[in-house]
Amino acid sequence: MLELRRLDVAYGRRAIVEDLSAGPLAADTVTALLGPNGSGKSTLLKAVAGLVPLRGGQVLLDGRDLADGGFAQRARQVAYLPQSLPAAVHLRVFESVLAAAHATVGSLRAQAADTGAVMALLERLGIGHLALHYLDRLSGGQKQLAGLAQALVRQPRLLLLDEPLSALDLNHQFHVLDLLREETRERGLVTVIVLHDLNIALRHADRCLLMRGGRLLAEGAPRDVVTAETLAAAYGVRGRVETCSRGLPQVIIDGLAVSLPPLSPPMPPTP
Ligand SMILES: Nc1ncnc2c1ncn2[C@@H]1O[C@H](COP(=O)(O)OP(=O)(O)OP(=O)(O)O)[C@@H](O)[C@H]1O
Image (cartoon, rainbow, N blue to C red; front, side):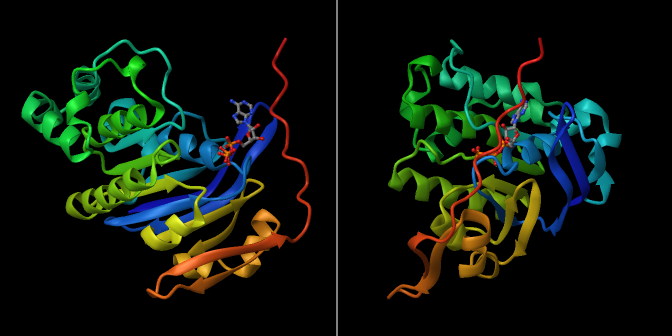
């Protein structure tokens, strides 16, 4: 399980994530990380992945501080998919997934050598036919699916995905979410996905974390986190969660509740 204890993350002197505690998030569960633009979701995910240093706090995976294990151990346990993949990687999809598998260590290396397993994963993601295509010639959605394959092939314990559905059409969004839930359950992963679509979070996540201004506003079951109150407090909209004719929760937005303060600007570049 994953536990975040009193995390502080800053860029330079500007605090982005402040005193954030969450979890424990159990293995076998998919957690949606929600929040408005600039609330610190990506920064939090990068800090958990070890790509941005913590100014304070601990990330505990199965009770052990990830910072204690060193880079190789963290790489073996954690797979992180960034919001946007590097634009110009001139590798074939198949090669890139194999390279991702080889980047990890230990027993995974043997599995990585199994080209059949890589092909099977690409087929499951619906991109088997793109195996020999170059990454830098794919569409945005196809590239996102290849990125997912690179993360999944590493068979991590903790899977961190930053907006993995943003370029996918409706069919692929559902397909990928089903696959992620399946992988999470079958392999006992802790999966955290940054999402903007609250209906997807309500329908597919086991838990939700809702951020606002670098802090945690709510945590719990999706129906308890996405409410009229939190829609107003986090997003500044008037809305409600209703149950559709098939018994599924559905967010309905009625309008703006309050005008939100402007998004905080990024740090000025250092001279
Ligand atoms: N590398 C960086 N250097 C300095 N400031 C940064 C950097 N990356 C992000 N920030 C700032 O940190 C704040 C939080 O950004 P972050 O990307 O974590 O938010 P987010 O919730 O993921 O937003 P979005 O939903 O728009 O992707 C923003 O004000 C952003 O300008």
